Image (tube, rainbow, N blue to C red):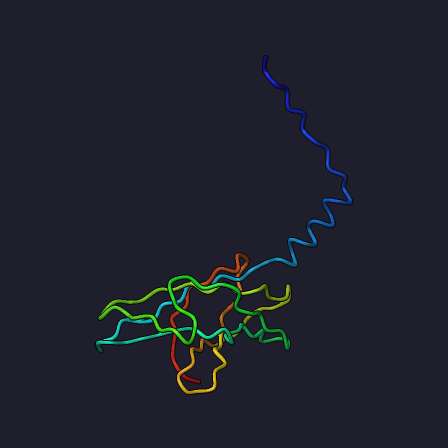
Length: 133
């Protein structure tokens, strides 16, 4: 015998409250390129104290996950003469944010910095990393 599955009806109020939760849980994905270098032995890492700073407010989005790069104090070896890509995932930006900075706030020189990244509707970005600020 074939089982009949009945489509559930979801109360409108519940759908509206879930929409609010979706807005709260948005994430920002930043694919980063560390440009090819003619030097052997390049090492990079990312610090937990890396944020997205909204240019229109005091808001800063926290780093929540990384892919293909190590967290400080560990180091990642950068391949010789090849662009090196890694991904950073941050907590959501405010709805009215139009641009933001990616900044690694660290107690030494050489932190990653990308100035004035223009906001898009997907909150997925590709940036080229520069050192120092």
